[in-house]
Length: 160
Image 1 (spheres, rainbow, N blue to C red):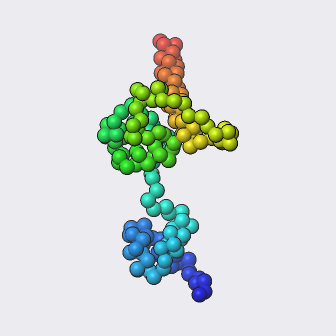
Image 2: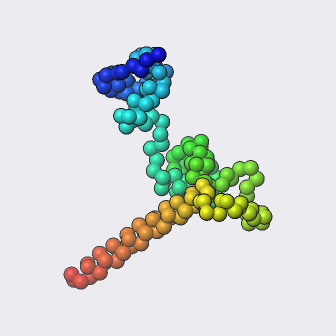
Image 3: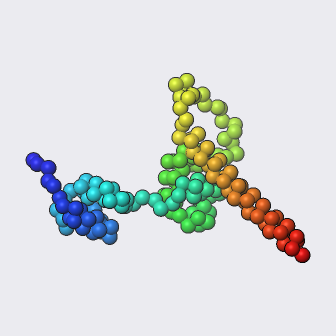
């Protein structure tokens, strides 16, 4: 078994073909492995199947879902239900299913963390902090907009 050396032109051709075709079609067309196709695509900066949504948008959707149904959330933000559930898991939001209830959650016994995890930030804490940052950024945008409106009103009155 030897290590094959492929030309840059072939790599570029494979990646271009891969952009509009599946991995299986690409491997059959060019006779290279799936790992090779993925590797060349990553090297060229093309990431197939990754979410086009920004982190702030994902947090906003997850926070809206806290107090609304999944159907309402998906309709408002025009996203797939599977995406919302995956984002909540990845960002550390709690799962609303499996008997978690917003009303009775405060009545549940408080879980003690193990001492070894006191210093390390958990996914959930990290997700909560990112969510709070997203909310604060929105508030800052609103405050900035209001300040601009006040300044425009003041400048308009001074000219008269």
